[in-house]
Length: 243
Image: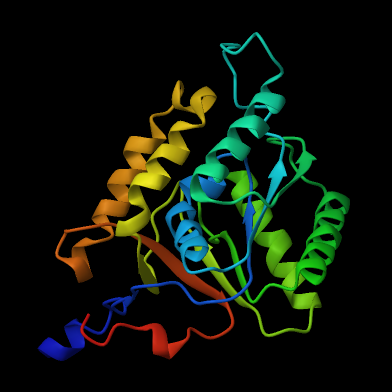
């Protein structure tokens, strides 16, 4: 085997985007907190460059307090309040909550209903860019949302750029978006989810992940968020030619 043959299994090097693509943005999140934990830095960059951003949170987050630590209020109410507070830190006030039971194993009928809701949401908002969990994100609700949104896209005519983000499982990305300018906003937005931070210190974990994502292109100086292409074509003009 030659040296070149031995290297053919290497994954492609991700491109670097200094800025996300411009356009109307629709972000699907499976739980109240994934909207900031996953693409939060990117969404804040969209806001900074003047893009309209809408977030849809699909489940109610009612499994988010298994030890009953938040006995003062209903956990689903708490989590929606935390979600709105976190999004406000990112500069986003357009959020919709479907209230689907958290952790529910969806039947075929449930998936069909979810697809219909996603189709209606995409048609209503007419985004050019869609964010959703990537295919192997490692949580049943995340995967169910991936299935729902991709099936909805298969039913729609439109030139959508659909990009997958990571939360639970790190991906081999197609793109790294530099989020150095919004890393602190994302950290503060994650801390708004106090009911979840008391269980998992995900602000620390995901801030570390975004720092790690700066290693290839930014020499470990800054932050980035990883994306994989799900539908559409990556805009070639966004790729930093020096990276």
